[in-house]
Image (cartoon, one colour):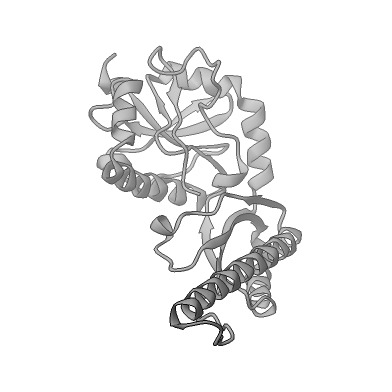
Length: 270
């Protein structure tokens, strides 16, 4: 399979969009027109000759991080001009004919998705257990060793209660925010090693918000942060609607998937 025909897919739109941003590895981005849709692609990075080669790259954290930033930059530029269905990171087609065939096959679903996200933007809300010292009563039972163990058990119990309260309040905050949005998704909480935060994440929500209600949504996040003192809420975005569109190239029965000529999808930013 010749690498020069490999295509990296960024997003699908309904209308032509002027692209003024470079793609992965500064490759030129262009539109492929099929089934009344526009697919925005660039030549795939060197070394992506088949699914095995792609998997090897995906196991390289530095390559993934760098590619994710470059991929998102293009998707965000396209989304700023109109509704798009973003492709997940590393959605790669072997050639243009396979891509156009896929667009034709899924045109109805893609069109529905474009209608659903038009005039709307994805916002993220991440919630963390609110930190601070844990207060436990002093104990004088037994000797110093016994008192220390009792204190440690009391601290652990208090931390568990605080975490449980934060989870309960995060559930309530998510429900309230979902009422403010046209769509809501709750992703799995991220590990501290990914967030860099000292406290556990208890909410990793995504919300599809009409652009006209963006300020009201942000105000709702602030109000909920004040209402629930057990959690710290952080608003992120705006993002292209990654969480509210069908994944491209995900069908396991798709005969056009690499290495036989189609797409490999490796997920997008959460």
